[in-house]
Amino acid sequence: MLGIRRWLHVGLLIILSTVLGACSSRDPVATEPLDLTKPIAVDQAGQEVWFEFEINERNFIPDRTYSLGLELQRQDPHAGNSPDMHGLNIPFDVSLQRWMDGDWVDVPTHDSFQAMALNAGKPLPAWHASNTWRYARLRSGSDGEYHLSIVALPVEIDARYRLQVRTVQARPELQQYTSRLRVHVARLPGK
Image (tube, rainbow, N blue to C red):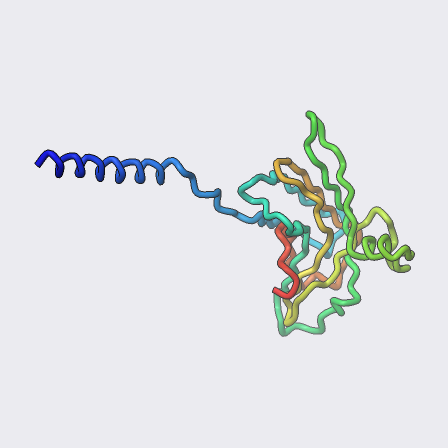
């Protein structure tokens, strides 16, 4: 009887230590990818949107690109002709800043046209009217719904950012579209 009681105590201690060990070991923090949206009237000049966000272990995905994009959706898919989205060059004034040592510090950004020109050592296209503007480029879309990429955001973990985006030219051909800016983790190529 004494032997059985001893084995029961040992078994109970093993079960208890296993349960306590499971409770004390924390699961990794679940990732919640950064995904922020705000409407903007891209058919009008001087429209401004601000984002403020923090990159932390909860929303940081290593080896992924964070980007600022533009989403356009035609209000009435049956009304008139759509502009050529491949040839539509929509400029924005983009300012990305990082909070460092008690002050906001500018972080340089480039649109895809600027990045290609820098990498190839070639000039910007003639229509790229200003080196300070960032132009949206069609990434995907059809049937009145389009996704355009504006800039990749060079963000780092454990940092706070402020992003200002402003339209710089009136685009009357986009009056029939609702539009919003999206700060998000870019999809992997081919997805």
